[in-house]
Image (cartoon, rainbow, N blue to C red; front, side, top):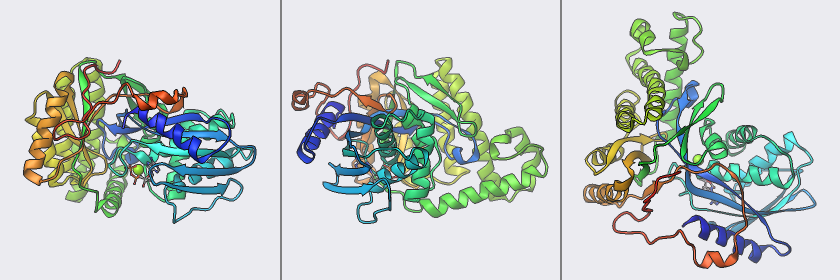
Length: 419
Ligand code: ADP
Ligand code: MG
């Protein structure tokens, strides 16, 4: 579903569920990480882009501290008071909004309530971070309606806390940060220790293509915790031999070669992935700045091999998608993205070949696995913000929606790269 249609739907649903004046519109995008996997919780570097799929809120300020919500996706409502916010186990999606409300109340007890409709076209549970998009869209709506003027960086941090403490998911800062601060046409290099960031423009002639294995992440919680423990074991060992090591971020590949021999073999492999992956992110940024997309692509392939062999978080379906991508027209690089054990790959593809690429990978995967993968050709997009209210008529004739074609159901052909 395209942006204009989504905007029309969310406005129409608001008119249907809430009487009174018109709402204001807020959005936050999903994201995909180009390189830098499992580096965030090691204080390292990541390079995500905000994509052209969003969660939107049509929201109107209330004079009291009540919040009334309607979800277009789940076709159900939820209501609560900002003065006493409890999680609601029956209406799980509302907890992202409740969590953000709860964190904002700690900062600004004068926060006012809202009537809001939530809708989105970030696929839910595919690893494109619809949850962060919902949190950040909510935060931006509350912030603007109550004129709080909290910085985007602080809103991102508060949304992460909402997901960690209120929803109970232990995520890093990347998803909320890119949803809040993404820039059109650019990836964002984020230093997960200092939270310094800089935009890195994507060359005009490449497309970012996401392919979904359609395999939902199973083992992910226990394996994620195991990897975090192994990284911590590596840090404890190395900090006794190297001054100033607080996290694997502080270790170079030279350090690991000199001092890593005494580590348990499995811990050495985990450390090798993280240390090399951090170095790859910085090399990838240098390659982009030099418009060397071929080098960037090679770094993506190396990242995948490292995640598969050293970090051991890939799976046969992800490996197959990367292999198919490497043989498809226009492919510069491919790798798994996200926590692993399922979810998506991210691919850098010559823009003019993106549609052929998507069709070939989708049909190859269908032949081997019997499942048609969702494929998304993405534009690097703007982070969260308020949107101009569209005329209702536009919803009936969205200018940017196109029919899907062939095996790849979600392919959006892109003739022009982001500008
Ligand atoms: P993801 O990888 O997409 O972030 P999560 O499981 O972390 O997957 O978050 C998905 C959850 O976020 C959904 O189950 C729902 O509770 C909430 N969510 C995401 N998008 C929407 C939406 N458009 N409307 C309502 N809730 C949403
Ligand atoms: Mg999520």
